[in-house]
Length: 132
Image 1: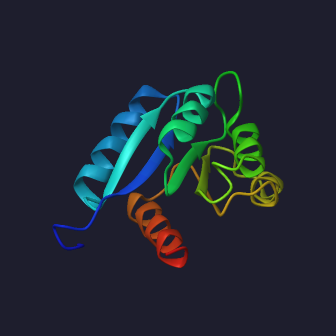
Image 2: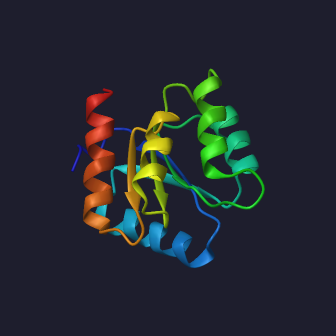
Image 3: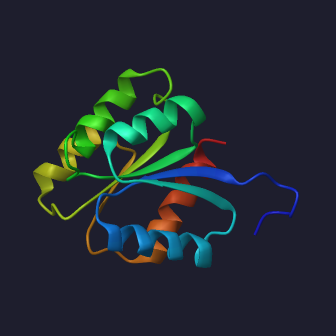
């Protein structure tokens, strides 16, 4: 755990499923107190949030209503605000082709649902360490 005076690392989570948003909220509160998370249900709202507030990292669900998580990922990689955000795509899509597509589209990592919460936190911390 970082010293009490260290600033929290901002993480944006984009997930349309209400139950998963509750899971993420609990996960970060219980297992990653050094991270300040913000939840959005739609890609459009996430993009607006990032442009106004920024974030060190983002967790994107692939299957979002409207703009997909993959399209949001591509937009972020072309946008000056999102170019340096560390991004983990989380999806129920388990095919190798989907994983490759996400990674080649700019994701830093990919996790298939269901995932182990400790693995997600470890991968997120690893990404943040590598970019410090």
